[in-house]
Length: 320
Image (cartoon, rainbow, N blue to C red; front, side, top):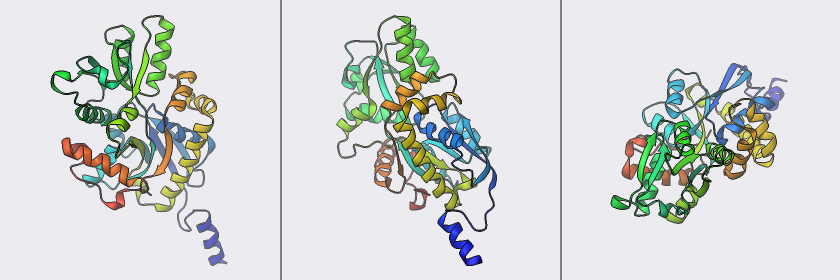
């Protein structure tokens, strides 16, 4: 009888000896990488693993670092370089998957700016100077020869809200921003009736043109923090549930947007829906895309090694 019970438990992915946890905290930013987490909470996808599962919104990578330091998060959406830094500093975290392969857009009110090359010598806003979008921008501009006198005059803002305010006020003309902020910004620009704001090019399209040997650009995924990283049954169950939720969000963008709006009510459902449609939301196990991750990490290591913790993570870092 005990043997039969063990087989049943193993077949359902449950541990024969682990009782459900009291609580699991899933955290993420205002971006499509978080939307499957919200769907998982709403649908009880991890009900067999915890008595309570909740979503916690973070507004910047610095805030996420604080939450992780306080051990207030179990699973979090994250830019792919942050867990590499953490594991290389001795913290037992894992990158479980990569789910976002495109969320950065160049936008402009300047009709002469139609590609990244047109930004040569022109002002450009962006955010998070020490984090992944800025690192990707720096690598892209360098590879395209937009350096020295041809380099865009980059101005860093403290957050997306500041960049949006400058663009809407006409104090800036071009920016590199993330979804869904871009969709919201375009909607607000149309409502104001001023100079129209247009999508110039996604950073991912520009990257694909510039680095054809490594056309896929892993940007964000889910990290298992120390509290859960050592529980392979739970992390595997999490990855399966996240993958199902990501597919649902992509297939049902309007329904997903309405669900997400309950948690991020400052974002209109229309902007959320547009962001789902234009974002490449595709959940893939970190182990399966390890070559893409290592190609990106190596590129960063050449120019800013501390941004990935000064070395490639070991094999155990990738996947549940």
